[in-house]
Image (cartoon, rainbow, N blue to C red; front, side, top):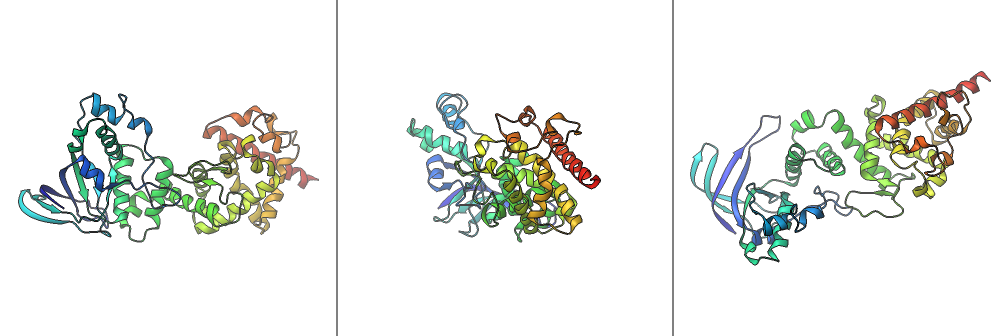
Amino acid sequence: MKFENVQRIVQWGHGEGAREIPLYVFTVPAEALAEKAEIFKRTPQRRKGYQRELTPARLRTGKLGVPGYLLNQMGIFPTSILVNVRKEEGTVKFEKKGSIGDFIEIGDLVVPDHPIWYVIDGQHRLEGLKIATRKKEDLAKYPVILTMTNEDVLYEMLIFYIVNSRVKSVPTGLAYRILQRMLYDIKAPKWINQTIMRGADRRKAIAATIVDFLNMELENPFKGRIQEVGEARRPEHLTTDETLTRYMTLVLRESMFSEMFDRDVAELLAEYWGAIKNIYPECFEHHEDYLLLRTIGLSSLSRLFPTIYGYCARDGDISKNNMEKYLRCLLEDTPEHRDVDFRRPIDQKWWHKVDGPGIIHGTGEGHYTDVFINLGEKISAVLRKRKGA
């Protein structure tokens, strides 16, 4: 298909590996866009997807929905919808007719008929137009301002991340997965590692990979029981991909783990959580009745992992059995503990959402840190008592 009077705008940056990117700006009828466009959502069957689920509220006919805006309000969209025709699927051809400036040309754009137009930004506008068209047929001819790129899928995802993370937030679970792909893709330009892939963002990308090992490969209590991004919640799910990745990131803040291979860290965590399950089997079997696998448990016990690892490393025995030996210190009485809720055994009843102490219902990372500190002090108290004996 051929589009006339298209602007070809070339933009660029100076990061290492950055290059000139041509953008093609033109208008297209809503109906024609709807026929060609696809939203590349992430699901368990499509792990390379990067788009979020549609937000139902934005597709209603009320005042805050796109259909309602078109049917009952001003109905203009002054900003463009951003799409990509992947290089892997087809190459667009630009026939120059004139120039506006050094990096802005006017001409005709020939787009192959077969490739999909992947929507990078504007999915709710597109879907809202389709809904509104069912009420007002003239909206099928609604002129949509379009910006088209012709990049590979890596750059398509990278553009999505930049547009959404710097203008409006990417859902956390998707952000982890996008960072993961950028870190491990050997074709990624160097500026990504030099700017985005540093510190916390790098840890998030590695943590997402560790969660994949736990969910899909290694034998551990979480295998096959983590709700992935884009997956419906099922009774057997113990937690979400997003939540567990967040707390695996805490582990990687410790330098001893940040320098290890991601699989090696995953194997250690598989053993650690296996030891926890041996001590608290009911918390896994009937997880809905306990808070051990909610944020307070996942956060505090993830923070405790480096402590348990340190004890085991000192012994020269980093096995599940040795980890369990230290974790079982939590089951003992420590009457000298400064916090009354940690003097009695931290047993399964302690984690029960009804029978447990009020402290397990506290929220916020500061509170979870306090719980971790108290758990660590309890283990230390038991070990001191044994040593003294």
